[in-house]
Length: 553
Image 1 (cartoon, one colour):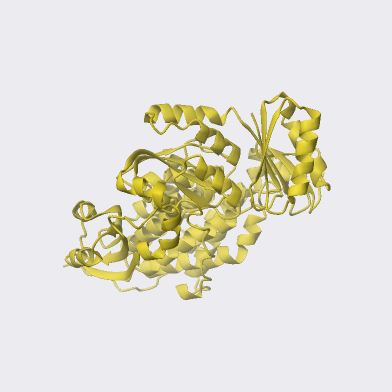
Image 2 (cartoon, rainbow, N blue to C red; image 1 turned 60 degrees about the vertical axis):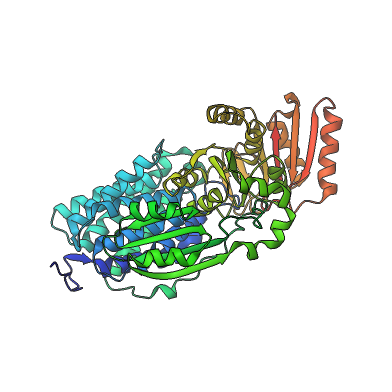
């Protein structure tokens, strides 16, 4: 019989309880400074959310770690990995989850770690993160974490203890962070260092504080997670004919839990099945007819915790009634192709729904949906092939992780970076087509539309030749600031000129929640009088942050 060692604190090793404290402290450190990280956004527009995304990701990891009562480092690290994946938001959050995932792999089977093992775990995290990104970009959190790991390995090999090892990691990481503007010119233009790299070093600083005994608090002291973006503004299923109306979730704790066997046994008892975790802790999510039978089965394996059962029929009665005719068929007869899209603004949501999107996640700027949020939307679509339209470059990486959470559907991420690209892709979606035809048609459509936005500056800055003052109206083309000024109409006009709208066939305008229809009409009138042969479409998008979203085709 193997006994766990007692949780004895030592300067030379890190045990499971200390690992848990490190994660807690990382959450607290980033919570205190997430606005600082958000402010490092390259552009001075109100969508800098790197710090918030990383905070929500590691907060999810900490909550999972808190569920583990054992003292093995490997147990805590595995829970941290699972929690971070489920809560990963935005590119920065997904990369952070991969760093934590690699660390968990490195410490598998270990009750405690010494400085060298800790440094090797950091390096394993870097290796995992680089592999997870199809086209790694230097001058980002990847570079900073890589250099931090190098510093940790060097110090550990010289005989440093865990605190000294992490201190050297932060020192080397800080050196790399200060050089990020030299690697990425866009950072130098904005006068900032990489936000993700800064966030990662803040987390490491929290780890150091925890090991030095400066931070010790309970998970309850961490501020609650901000309210989620609405899960689906226009895509709730008609539920009055659901075959499996009870959404059942719980944690299963035990020894030698066989995840594959549990998944296989539950697969025939419902749908939207999710079974993830480790041999000692498994999370189960399933839609079923009889929750009692699911719980009885699970109790054969171990003990049940945090049981949640929701009657989806009762919860969604009103929405189900409104969409009964169109949705019942989708629930009753699974189709071959379905679409999930992320967008913002009620008017834009309605357009996406009319174009055939099955599930619309409300999100985008300032609140990126997590991997689990997207996965849950995918589960609600009764189709074998799901096409995900992120419609934001900062959501693509989170969408790509969904396949790891869902095994019974084939996931195809169409890398749309804007609302305009998402609509273009939908216009080339063929419900009766093959997977290959849809992927080719939707992806090729992305390059045939030009996207523009009009928003405002949240701080003074310099970008290329533009001197930007806080409160300026900003015009962006393909995500790049091209014009600024104080007058909304003139900036909108100049942005469209930068898009060469006069050479296009169609200009589409979505005006936001802060724009009056009369203002939008004034812009439309200018377009029609300037170039009568170009078709103009104007819609009340209702989107926040952006006064206008443009597309030129």
